[in-house]
Amino acid sequence: MPVELFLQVIGSTKTLIELEPYCNKDLRISDLPEADSSSLFGSHANSRLSWLIDVLRRLKVNRVVLRIKKLQKSGDSFKT
Image (tube, rainbow, N blue to C red; front, side, top):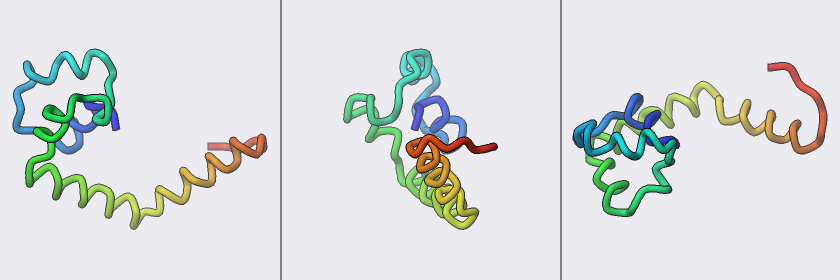
């Protein structure tokens, strides 16, 4: 997940000044140094991320994404 999207959806207790270099480089959470990525995941961030994943799962968004990827791999055309 891109850092900027994570901050918009989940939020963080870190200041924007501390995280601005990561947002400007279009980095993902997995690209951050371990100390920085683990500092983003406080107890509130973990619960908000779990809640978001649960909502997306209930909306069956993951099934739509998997179907689109399957169609892309097979070369079939699809409408979004």
